[in-house]
Image 1 (cartoon, rainbow, N blue to C red):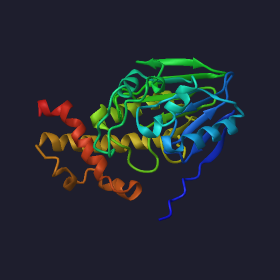
Image 2: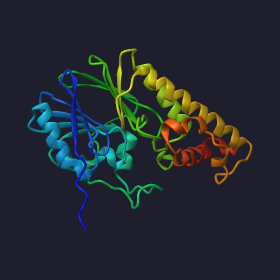
Image 3: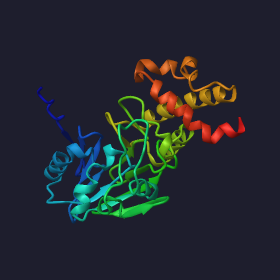
Image 4: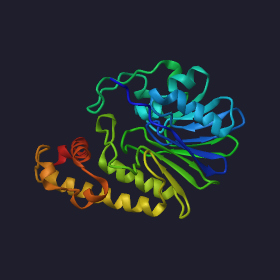
Amino acid sequence: MAHEPPPSLTTTSLGDGLWLIAGAGCNVVAAPGPEGALLIDGGLEAHSSRLVKAALQATQSRRVHVLFNTHWHPEQTGSNERLGKDGALIVAHENTRLWLSRPIETDWLPQLYGPLPPKARPTRTTYTTDTLTYGRRIDYGYLQQAHTDGDIYVHFPEQKLLVAGGVVSNDGWPLMDYKTGGWIAGLVAGYDKLLQVAGPDTRIVPANGPLLQRTDLQAHRKMYFTIYDRLVQSLLKGVGADEILATQPAKEFVAQWGNPDAFIERSYRSLWGHYAANA
Protein backbone atom coordinates (compact mmCIF):
# COMPACT_ATOMS: atom_id res chain seq x y z
CA MET A 1 0.00 0.00 0.00
CA ALA A 2 1.38 3.40 -1.00
CA HIS A 3 2.12 5.85 1.78
CA GLU A 4 0.59 9.29 1.64
CA PRO A 5 3.17 11.97 0.79
CA PRO A 6 4.05 14.31 3.65
CA PRO A 7 2.11 17.56 3.67
CA SER A 8 3.80 20.38 1.82
CA LEU A 9 5.11 23.31 3.81
CA THR A 10 4.21 26.82 2.74
CA THR A 11 6.44 29.76 3.62
CA THR A 12 4.93 33.26 3.58
CA SER A 13 6.67 36.55 4.26
CA LEU A 14 5.13 38.58 7.07
CA GLY A 15 7.44 41.52 6.35
CA ASP A 16 10.25 42.92 8.50
CA GLY A 17 12.20 39.69 8.19
CA LEU A 18 9.45 37.57 9.74
CA TRP A 19 8.16 34.41 8.07
CA LEU A 20 5.15 32.15 8.55
CA ILE A 21 5.64 28.46 7.85
CA ALA A 22 2.48 26.33 7.72
CA GLY A 23 2.00 22.60 7.22
CA ALA A 24 4.24 21.13 9.93
CA GLY A 25 1.40 20.58 12.42
CA CYS A 26 0.97 24.18 13.54
CA ASN A 27 1.77 27.69 12.40
CA VAL A 28 5.46 28.43 12.91
CA VAL A 29 6.97 31.92 12.85
CA ALA A 30 10.65 32.27 11.93
CA ALA A 31 12.95 35.27 12.20
CA PRO A 32 16.68 35.86 11.61
CA GLY A 33 18.90 36.87 14.50
CA PRO A 34 22.52 37.66 15.33
CA GLU A 35 23.41 34.04 16.21
CA GLY A 36 20.96 32.19 14.00
CA ALA A 37 17.27 31.81 13.34
CA LEU A 38 14.52 32.12 15.93
CA LEU A 39 11.48 29.84 15.73
CA ILE A 40 8.18 30.15 17.55
CA ASP A 41 7.00 26.55 17.89
CA GLY A 42 8.59 23.58 16.21
CA GLY A 43 5.88 21.55 14.52
CA LEU A 44 5.51 17.79 14.80
CA GLU A 45 8.64 15.68 15.08
CA ALA A 46 7.82 13.93 11.80
CA HIS A 47 8.09 17.26 9.97
CA SER A 48 10.95 18.76 11.99
CA SER A 49 13.72 18.18 9.45
CA ARG A 50 11.80 19.84 6.60
CA LEU A 51 10.58 22.62 8.86
CA VAL A 52 14.06 23.55 10.07
CA LYS A 53 15.37 23.46 6.51
CA ALA A 54 12.56 25.78 5.35
CA ALA A 55 13.17 28.17 8.27
CA LEU A 56 16.91 28.35 7.62
CA GLN A 57 16.31 28.99 3.94
CA ALA A 58 13.72 31.71 4.60
CA THR A 59 15.81 33.51 7.22
CA GLN A 60 19.14 32.96 5.42
CA SER A 61 20.55 31.44 8.60
CA ARG A 62 22.99 28.61 9.25
CA ARG A 63 21.38 27.31 12.44
CA VAL A 64 18.42 27.78 14.77
CA HIS A 65 19.57 29.50 17.95
CA VAL A 66 16.26 30.19 19.74
CA LEU A 67 13.09 28.08 19.90
CA PHE A 68 9.92 29.12 21.71
CA ASN A 69 7.40 26.51 22.89
CA THR A 70 4.03 28.23 23.30
CA HIS A 71 2.91 25.09 25.24
CA TRP A 72 3.84 21.40 25.59
CA HIS A 73 1.77 19.78 22.80
CA PRO A 74 3.54 17.58 20.21
CA GLU A 75 2.68 20.04 17.42
CA GLN A 76 4.68 22.71 19.23
CA THR A 77 7.59 20.69 20.65
CA GLY A 78 8.47 18.30 17.81
CA SER A 79 11.75 20.10 17.06
CA ASN A 80 12.92 20.32 20.68
CA GLU A 81 15.14 17.26 20.54
CA ARG A 82 16.70 18.13 17.18
CA LEU A 83 17.43 21.75 18.11
CA GLY A 84 18.19 21.15 21.78
CA LYS A 85 20.99 18.75 20.85
CA ASP A 86 22.49 21.54 18.76
CA GLY A 87 22.48 23.90 21.72
CA ALA A 88 19.43 26.02 20.89
CA LEU A 89 17.93 28.11 23.67
CA ILE A 90 14.42 26.75 24.29
CA VAL A 91 12.03 29.28 25.86
CA ALA A 92 8.71 28.39 27.49
CA HIS A 93 6.59 28.71 30.60
CA GLU A 94 7.86 26.79 33.59
CA ASN A 95 4.79 24.53 33.55
CA THR A 96 5.63 23.50 29.99
CA ARG A 97 9.12 22.50 31.14
CA LEU A 98 7.62 20.48 33.98
CA TRP A 99 5.19 18.66 31.68
CA LEU A 100 7.97 17.79 29.24
CA SER A 101 9.97 16.30 32.11
CA ARG A 102 7.46 13.51 32.71
CA PRO A 103 5.19 11.10 30.77
CA ILE A 104 1.95 12.87 29.84
CA GLU A 105 -1.29 10.93 29.57
CA THR A 106 -4.19 12.49 27.68
CA ASP A 107 -7.52 11.37 26.23
CA TRP A 108 -6.60 12.58 22.73
CA LEU A 109 -3.16 11.04 22.09
CA PRO A 110 -2.93 7.30 21.38
CA GLN A 111 0.04 6.89 23.76
CA LEU A 112 2.01 8.70 26.41
CA TYR A 113 3.99 11.76 25.32
CA GLY A 114 7.37 12.35 26.90
CA PRO A 115 9.38 12.73 28.90
CA LEU A 116 11.66 14.52 26.45
CA PRO A 117 15.41 14.10 26.97
CA PRO A 118 16.98 16.76 29.22
CA LYS A 119 18.54 18.63 26.29
CA ALA A 120 15.12 18.82 24.60
CA ARG A 121 13.44 20.55 27.53
CA PRO A 122 13.07 24.32 27.88
CA THR A 123 16.21 26.01 29.21
CA ARG A 124 14.77 29.47 29.83
CA THR A 125 11.37 29.68 31.49
CA THR A 126 9.05 32.34 32.82
CA TYR A 127 6.18 32.46 35.27
CA THR A 128 4.75 35.80 34.15
CA THR A 129 6.15 38.04 31.39
CA ASP A 130 9.62 38.61 30.01
CA THR A 131 11.50 40.22 27.13
CA LEU A 132 14.13 38.75 24.84
CA THR A 133 16.30 41.10 22.79
CA TYR A 134 17.42 39.17 19.75
CA GLY A 135 18.05 41.59 16.92
CA ARG A 136 14.68 43.06 17.84
CA ARG A 137 12.49 43.27 20.92
CA ILE A 138 10.39 40.19 21.63
CA ASP A 139 7.94 40.19 24.54
CA TYR A 140 6.37 37.01 25.81
CA GLY A 141 3.95 36.32 28.61
CA TYR A 142 1.84 33.81 30.45
CA LEU A 143 -1.80 33.28 29.44
CA GLN A 144 -2.63 31.52 32.73
CA GLN A 145 -4.64 28.30 32.65
CA ALA A 146 -6.10 28.62 29.17
CA HIS A 147 -6.07 25.54 26.94
CA THR A 148 -3.19 24.12 29.02
CA ASP A 149 -1.63 25.52 32.19
CA GLY A 150 1.53 26.62 30.35
CA ASP A 151 0.33 28.74 27.43
CA ILE A 152 2.37 31.77 26.42
CA TYR A 153 2.09 34.41 23.70
CA VAL A 154 5.07 35.87 21.82
CA HIS A 155 4.78 39.49 20.71
CA PHE A 156 6.87 41.50 18.25
CA PRO A 157 5.71 44.99 19.27
CA GLU A 158 7.67 46.91 16.63
CA GLN A 159 6.37 44.64 13.87
CA LYS A 160 2.84 44.56 15.35
CA LEU A 161 2.75 40.77 15.23
CA LEU A 162 1.33 38.64 18.06
CA VAL A 163 1.83 34.88 18.06
CA ALA A 164 -1.02 33.54 20.18
CA GLY A 165 -0.11 29.85 20.40
CA GLY A 166 -2.67 27.15 21.05
CA VAL A 167 -5.16 29.42 22.79
CA VAL A 168 -6.29 30.70 19.38
CA SER A 169 -7.35 28.41 16.54
CA ASN A 170 -8.65 29.71 13.23
CA ASP A 171 -9.46 26.44 11.46
CA GLY A 172 -11.88 24.84 13.91
CA TRP A 173 -12.41 24.40 17.61
CA PRO A 174 -9.31 24.49 19.84
CA LEU A 175 -8.29 21.51 21.93
CA MET A 176 -9.45 22.01 25.51
CA ASP A 177 -6.72 20.09 27.33
CA TYR A 178 -8.26 19.93 30.78
CA LYS A 179 -5.96 17.10 31.87
CA THR A 180 -2.99 19.46 31.76
CA GLY A 181 -4.67 22.43 33.37
CA GLY A 182 -6.79 24.01 30.65
CA TRP A 183 -10.34 25.17 31.32
CA ILE A 184 -12.87 27.22 29.41
CA ALA A 185 -13.01 30.19 31.77
CA GLY A 186 -9.22 30.33 31.51
CA LEU A 187 -9.53 30.28 27.73
CA VAL A 188 -11.75 33.36 27.94
CA ALA A 189 -9.26 35.01 30.30
CA GLY A 190 -6.46 34.15 27.85
CA TYR A 191 -8.32 36.08 25.18
CA ASP A 192 -8.66 39.01 27.57
CA LYS A 193 -4.89 39.04 28.00
CA LEU A 194 -4.28 38.83 24.25
CA LEU A 195 -6.67 41.74 23.71
CA GLN A 196 -4.66 43.77 26.21
CA VAL A 197 -1.49 43.08 24.24
CA ALA A 198 -2.90 43.50 20.72
CA GLY A 199 -3.31 46.97 19.27
CA PRO A 200 -5.84 47.92 16.58
CA ASP A 201 -3.32 47.16 13.82
CA THR A 202 -1.78 44.02 15.34
CA ARG A 203 -1.75 40.87 13.23
CA ILE A 204 -2.44 37.72 15.25
CA VAL A 205 -0.94 34.34 14.36
CA PRO A 206 -3.19 31.50 15.60
CA ALA A 207 -1.95 27.96 16.23
CA ASN A 208 -3.67 26.91 13.03
CA GLY A 209 -5.34 28.68 10.14
CA PRO A 210 -5.03 32.14 8.60
CA LEU A 211 -3.93 35.28 10.43
CA LEU A 212 -6.45 37.25 12.44
CA GLN A 213 -7.08 40.85 13.42
CA ARG A 214 -7.94 42.23 16.84
CA THR A 215 -11.63 42.37 15.91
CA ASP A 216 -11.50 38.62 15.22
CA LEU A 217 -10.14 38.02 18.72
CA GLN A 218 -13.02 40.02 20.14
CA ALA A 219 -15.51 37.85 18.24
CA HIS A 220 -13.81 34.64 19.41
CA ARG A 221 -13.80 35.86 23.00
CA LYS A 222 -17.54 36.63 22.85
CA MET A 223 -18.27 33.17 21.47
CA TYR A 224 -16.27 31.32 24.11
CA PHE A 225 -17.78 33.38 26.90
CA THR A 226 -21.28 32.57 25.62
CA ILE A 227 -20.47 28.84 25.64
CA TYR A 228 -18.80 29.08 29.06
CA ASP A 229 -21.84 30.81 30.56
CA ARG A 230 -24.19 28.17 29.19
CA LEU A 231 -22.01 25.35 30.48
CA VAL A 232 -21.90 26.83 33.97
CA GLN A 233 -25.68 27.15 34.01
CA SER A 234 -25.97 23.49 33.00
CA LEU A 235 -23.48 22.44 35.66
CA LEU A 236 -25.39 24.29 38.36
CA LYS A 237 -28.56 22.51 37.22
CA GLY A 238 -26.88 19.13 37.61
CA VAL A 239 -26.67 18.27 33.92
CA GLY A 240 -24.36 15.28 33.45
CA ALA A 241 -21.49 14.94 31.00
CA ASP A 242 -23.52 12.49 28.94
CA GLU A 243 -26.35 15.02 28.68
CA ILE A 244 -24.46 18.22 27.92
CA LEU A 245 -24.35 17.81 24.14
CA ALA A 246 -28.15 17.68 23.99
CA THR A 247 -28.29 21.23 25.39
CA GLN A 248 -26.45 22.50 22.26
CA PRO A 249 -24.45 25.24 24.00
CA ALA A 250 -22.67 26.14 20.73
CA LYS A 251 -25.60 25.78 18.36
CA GLU A 252 -25.27 29.12 16.57
CA PHE A 253 -21.53 28.62 15.95
CA VAL A 254 -21.65 25.22 14.27
CA ALA A 255 -22.10 26.56 10.74
CA GLN A 256 -18.85 28.51 10.99
CA TRP A 257 -16.71 26.25 13.17
CA GLY A 258 -17.98 22.72 12.56
CA ASN A 259 -18.91 19.96 14.99
CA PRO A 260 -18.23 21.24 18.53
CA ASP A 261 -18.88 18.00 20.43
CA ALA A 262 -15.29 17.22 21.49
CA PHE A 263 -14.71 20.84 22.50
CA ILE A 264 -17.97 20.98 24.48
CA GLU A 265 -17.36 17.70 26.30
CA ARG A 266 -13.83 18.66 27.35
CA SER A 267 -14.86 22.19 28.24
CA TYR A 268 -17.63 20.85 30.47
CA ARG A 269 -15.24 18.48 32.22
CA SER A 270 -12.78 21.34 32.62
CA LEU A 271 -15.29 23.15 34.86
CA TRP A 272 -15.63 20.36 37.39
CA GLY A 273 -12.56 21.09 39.47
CA HIS A 274 -13.48 24.78 39.62
CA TYR A 275 -17.24 24.63 40.14
CA ALA A 276 -18.37 21.14 41.10
CA ALA A 277 -17.46 21.49 44.78
CA ASN A 278 -19.69 24.56 45.01
CA ALA A 279 -22.50 23.35 42.80
